[in-house]
Length: 279
Image 1 (cartoon, helix red, strand yellow):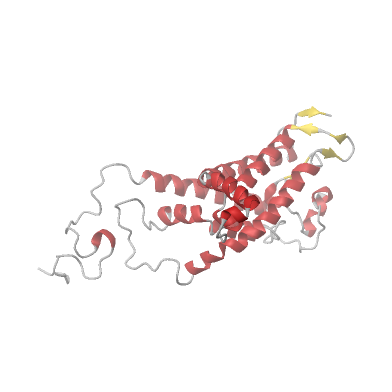
Image 2 (tube, one colour):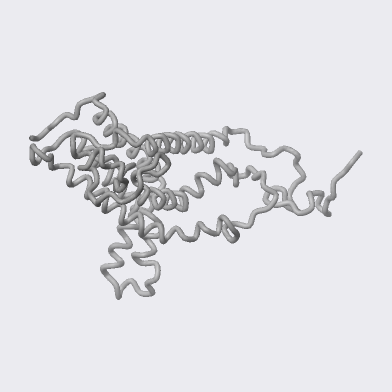
């Protein structure tokens, strides 16, 4: 019978985690009898749904501007020459080439993608779901070695704080889009269901951005004495309260982004009519 190298405790040489020397030699991958695979599976499905929808809509390049004032966040800021089809959507000019493989909002989408990709919560989410590192507590990961975020490419996760600043700028732009949407080119000040949809979405985006761990660090991470900085301490306490719900806002905003874009697309395509509440 062929045997593998064993250490004095009977475990595989070089084992890690539950397979490390000193642990009981159990052949089963895990003794957990509950459905531990459901959370990583649900996370995988949820993220794939968002990635699939966002990819299709980003490169569809139509139905992004409705009622001459609603701009979907997936196309904001609309700076492609292709935005000429909806000139009211180009609030900051048009200077990127119009090409099927270049998103109309190519100026912002890469930063938003990297902001979420390097987010502390999303790292946990996709490490456990896609990379199974680890899939669940007491369930060993399938990788033989793990070096954390100290080597390429995972070392790039450490630039998250810089993408946070870019996300702040984009959040301001999304806020501007929501505000200017209250004015119709011919009817003046109006309030429709679309305005409420854009407004709720941007408020939740601010909650997600402000609850970021990097934002909390900016507020008070380098302070030695809170008593000497009462304003920053107060901001730090507010952000800390939001930070406890960062994961919740991460998922909620994925949903509101899809719903907001879907609403704008349905109105723009004429599938539904925006209900006006004022004006």
